[in-house]
Length: 91
Image (cartoon, rainbow, N blue to C red; front, side, top):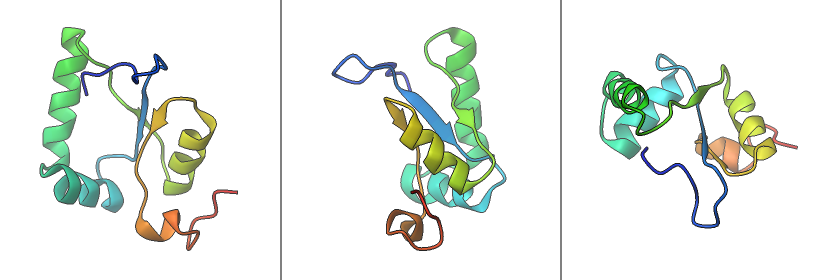
């Protein structure tokens, strides 16, 4: 959350779903090991202190995948079925 650029110098842009979205809640708990409200608090603290930037919130998993695909240096998350071309079409 404090790293603003990738090693190649490209700015990092973080995309997430709304905190109440089930996928965001699952990602926060299972992959990060914290509750979504804790993650929000960390982002707000880093943003207000000038040490980091808050992520860009998109409304749907499809929007998240499209935003990451279209934005150089972007990062986000997806459900397994989205990565394998199941329920979400990224083409």
